[in-house]
Image (tube, rainbow, N blue to C red; front, side, top):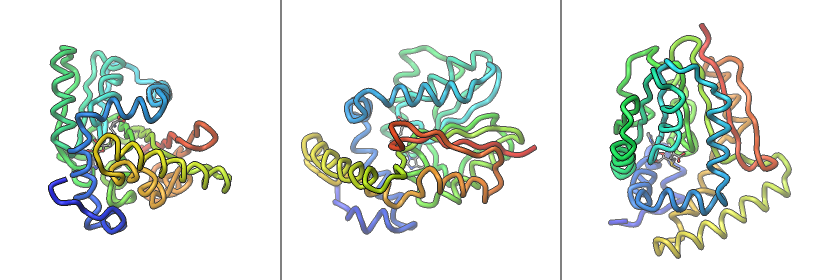
Amino acid sequence: MSQKLNLEEHISSKEKKQGYVTQMFEIIAPSYDFFTVLYSYGMDRGWKRKLIEMLNPKGHERALDLACGTGDITFALGEKLPSGEVIGLDITTGMIEIANQKRQEKGVNNVSFQLGDIMKMPFADNSFDYVTCGYALRNVPDVEQALVEIKRVMKPGGRIISLDFARPDNRIYRWLYLNYLIVTGSLAGILMHGDADIYRYIPESLKRYPGQHGVQDIMKRVGFTDTGFRVFGGGIMALNFGTKPN
Ligand SMILES: C[S@@+](CC[C@H](N)C(=O)[O-])C[C@H]1O[C@@H](n2cnc3c(N)ncnc32)[C@H](O)[C@@H]1O
């Protein structure tokens, strides 16, 4: 980081969090794919497959993949929507550059990527049949405001599915999990970037995130229906879902 920002101070503040998050993802973008497979023991691929399975697209719809990163979910959606369209949106230049490189290599033409902020999206109301979020909601400064903005760009009847770290309901398991993430995240940060905070961000952001129950409550509050979630690994990961009413 050009100037090292204090982790706790920044991610506890709605005004300062995005600056920290964007700077951090610019640093990790080139090693993001490698780290994600390594840190999840390869399970990330399975969770993303489940997300696509649950969405079960028909083939001609419009989808928006938020916080698309290097485009895993965006490309997987593109394969399921051969006569549709998928846009991947991310706030980090480095991520969008890698996603665009992959797009060129794959030669797909129903997928595109845009630089942008979930909190204020460059899309008209009622634009998308589906919205997917892969580790998106934990990273934004305000989950409720993000969901209001997401609902705005969704078509009536449109569906959202969000994959993110979750908090196990069992208190002992939750304590063990958070501390496991602190230790392994700090070590990975030191080894890969010489900075423990880079991946200690994961448990610290998870502590401040409403989790699978909280996200469902917020979805209901902002007007989504058919809300719910599915957890994996006893509650370490979750897929939250909802529908924008007709
Ligand atoms: C952990 S990565 C997830 C990437 C990808 N979705 C995946 O599942 O592999 C989180 C992404 O969120 C992006 N992000 C963070 N805040 C954002 C915001 N306000 N708007 C758009 N993207 C954001 C970051 O740039 C980063 O690429």
